[in-house]
Amino acid sequence: MIQIKNLHKSFGDLKVLKGVDINVEAGQVVVIIGPSGSGKSTVLRCINKLEEPTSGTIIVDGFDIMDPKTDINMVRTEATMVFQQFNLFPHMSVLDNVTLGPIKVRGMSKTDAMRLGMDLLKKVGLGDKAGNYPEQLSGGQKQRVAIARSLALQPKAILFDEPTSALDPELVGEVLEVMKQLAREGMTMIVVTHEMGFAKEVADRVIFIDEGKVQVDTDPETFFAHSDNPRLKDFLGKVV
Ligand code: ADP
Ligand code: MG
Image (cartoon, rainbow, N blue to C red; front, side, top):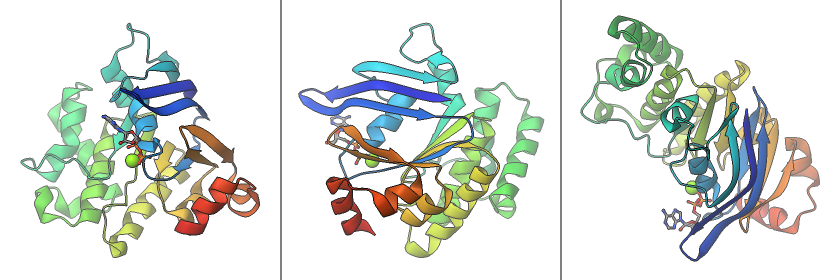
């Protein structure tokens, strides 16, 4: 579903990614962890071209995103992003936040979009908040709206960039629960997170990025129990 090959990304003189290779099969959940500033967000942002890769190949659902003929808006609906800071539209109701994409991007009728939007809000446990505005919601509720908004685009994959890092601890669980449900339903997901419990329980693979490269890419059991990578051991010692 997503193939990243030899991805390099520099900002001016700063070489952030120095040859990253990641493959994600349809239905897989891949968790990415790594120190702050190691380029985790940059990897996700390159996948849907919020950042322009410096070099390398990225294929999303068969489309080469570096090919000028590829419609980037289409790629962004196939692989949607959920951000740490939710990025909801503050002046729009919860339901309008969710239906905007399907109406504008997928060309869905307003009636169909509202039906889909209500179904998705119910799915994330917010059927009763459709008419509210984002500022009236808790952080956990806002992030669940953001997930419903991503789902409304009917994507092939969802890219989560530290979706629970901005939340009060007691609100983290409700968002992880929704993500676990998506994983069980077979959604393809790349999740940048520090939630090691989620990684252990849900991930098919866990990837450790450091120094601009993938240092470890393996199943969760091996990752947490048997990794002999000294940098990963050091990192896990600080976060777990
Ligand atoms: P992470 O998500 O792992 O914390 P990022 O991908 O956000 O790391 O950032 C990796 C490095 O790239 C950091 O040093 C950051 O300051 C730098 N960086 C990220 N985005 C930009 C940008 N738009 N312009 C310049 N430097 C950037
Ligand atoms: Mg980041």
